[in-house]
Length: 181
Image: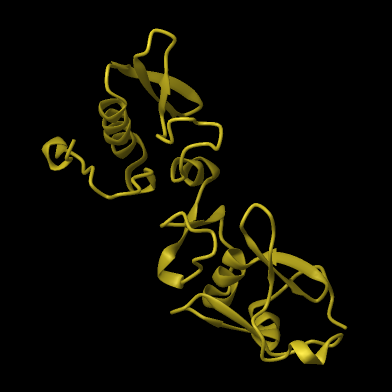
């Protein structure tokens, strides 16, 4: 049996096949259950990520994709450009720092408005704010939640660049009038 200490690209390619166009993993070897050979590898946990076991150690499939394709682990995190944790197509993955990865995620589940960077104040107005370099920055208060959201998205593009969360793709830097209200 192989050592658990350091998975290599060569060992990974012996055990699994990765299709960069679909993001799917197929098992080529399994010393414990031969019925899994040729089947899709991995399992999905409650937070929505797929994990795959190789030599009795589990890894996120997005991190394995970097090792499979480049021969190296990602320097930081393996981030999904479209925020879909199960879309591990190679052109959807990129290396990111923790801060960049959290910049490109949707609103928290506790956010009742469903708009990232926006919350309702007690007086009925809506406040937009953004976090950059561990500091919260107020972007203003608005009567309309949509205007607060647009303001947040423009600030996110300014501060987070390509890692800004922009689910619809309608807000573009310097093009406020492209957004339909």
